[in-house]
Image 1 (cartoon, rainbow over the protein chains, first blue to last red):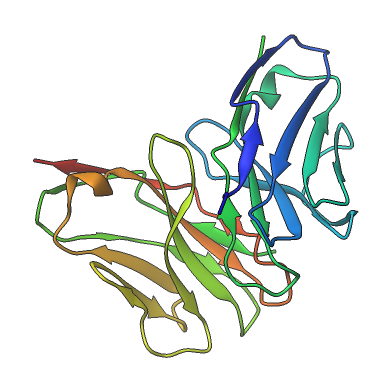
Image 2: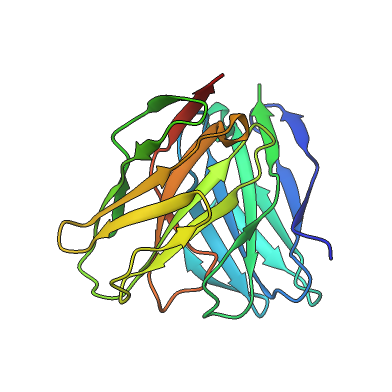
Length: 113
Length: 116
């Protein structure tokens, strides 16, 4: 049973560029959330997708956008990258809107230079 | 908005000893969930233990137990018989019951070192 998988594991981008990160949820899960974890800090909630729609959003600018596909996988897109966007991006999945536990992937380390 | 505070950026413990990590939170809700997650250098968040606010009994998972004080809004994690593999970053997290399991509010984390 595959857990949550994220790709790529590492990425280096130049300021001003755009980036797409990918997440495949744990088998049987239909809800995906994205988090940004700056170095030495706790993860911050970006947004959540369920039934291919953004259901909840944290305090992040519109440069951060996402998508969920019919197979429940998800993408996180960040436009006009800033140096401050350098962080570990974590994906978490769960089943439905009421399951208690979330399962996390190993994250994508994004470095903006 | 809910907030989670971990006041101990770093903690250390001798192998086989016991250590307690602190967490406080702020919420106006009466029903919610609390979690402790472990993040080793591999970066993947691993659930250690969870507590439902409506349950008075403190949760226990093998060597891990919590001290849940609802009135004080305190949720500490006790690790007994510490092992080298327990070394990691530990995060306390909060979740409202009506939101999906994958939307969590995290604290800033406590880096735990286990000395042999």
